[in-house]
Length: 79
Image (cartoon, rainbow, N blue to C red; front, side, top):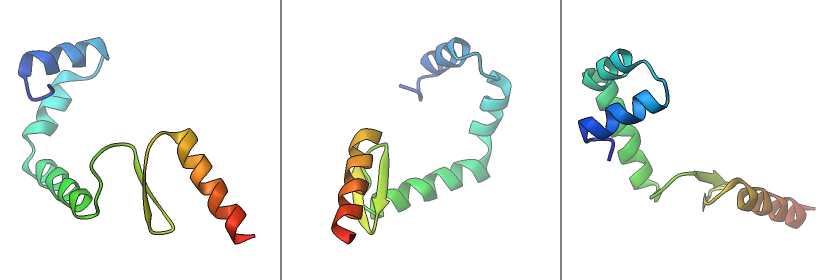
């Protein structure tokens, strides 16, 4: 969806973001390379969506409430 220029421009306007700055960043080869590296790293780590967190080496994908529940469970097992 964001790759479609007209949809992206509509979203930028709706969010009142600096369209020229974002367009310049999207043309920046260094930024694109970093995004691709970050994406590839996530794929290698098993991340396939957001939000994703690693807690004690275990991948957690879900909302904040379920993340808090996971952390609470780990703390309870530790004590």
